Image (cartoon, rainbow, N blue to C red; front, side, top):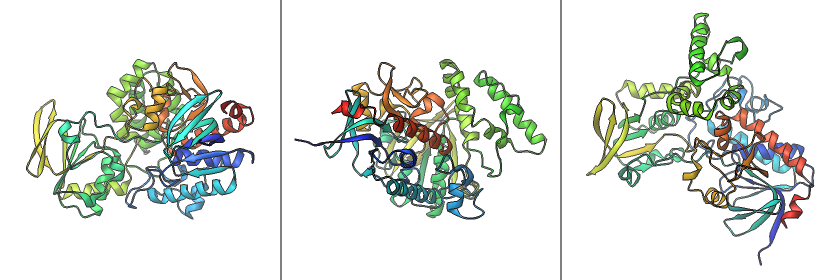
Length: 454
């Protein structure tokens, strides 16, 4: 007979989000609090902060990336002097997170790590029972889904592309050493594509790099010294997506006319963007996603200058070929996969040996291949949001069930909450969400919910 271990909380995921929840619990939870964190990967870095190269940099300066909500200078002190404006390697930030994770476990004897994966969760009484991939069951008064980002969707790609031996769906585990030939296609032109370009240059790749995107936009280049302004001074009209766009353009032009930087305007609405998003109707949110999202992303999520320079060096020598449109069909001719690219002006064809999906994380949970997500959806414990950006959550970060009711003690944070707040995937937002969830878990400790499970 299986033994069911009793816990106050099961935390699924030990990347950025899970690490920050653990760190907050280590500071605030009483000694009797027991939590198990489950992740098969190395705790701390997760997927985002464990690349094999120092070429891949954070997209924000060190001053904004502290893992400690009440101590914004924690990362800067860890890095050493003169680091405030640095865009540090993601791998270095991963080391910082790993240390914070280890520190949390050392500080609280009731918080532990399992390298197994949670594959199913069911409601039982006022709590939950979680099962891992080794068959062990855990009764928990609360659940925290620190799921991070899913791999990019490839449902839009022709079957011939998805089935091809040269296709790579997961760009975050890109390995240039397995490239098969001298022509590569990157689907998408955002930050992920720029990172792949930097890795290709680092490896001395001398083939053609085809970049394919529907709008042909490239991300703007970051200025680490640009700081957000007080949004109240900018006369922004946030009533609709179009009015926000128009007034932000006017504010950016005015700022530059006074010798400032347009990025200061873009940064100014970071703290109020969740409220703006919530203030729009579902129809307005959908209009933003369909018509303005690509332009917003290109200016809001900017590429590090060093990465942009790598792109420019390759473009200067003719290695970069940009294509605006989408891949409508594909077929193999010998060693090459021929892609048919279509846009409003017509169609063209290119032959490549490798193709990487750089379109960004897939937020459509109804398409997820994760066994846990599949089981949560089947049990009605998780509801995809209407825009397919993540899952439905309450204002206090509780996961909504199939009926639209907030569950008493199942929480989530970070990327899964995009449908609720849209901009909620960066360190400053996630560390605050982690702090709020930890407060709730501590407040619920000793309420009898755990006894109700067993």
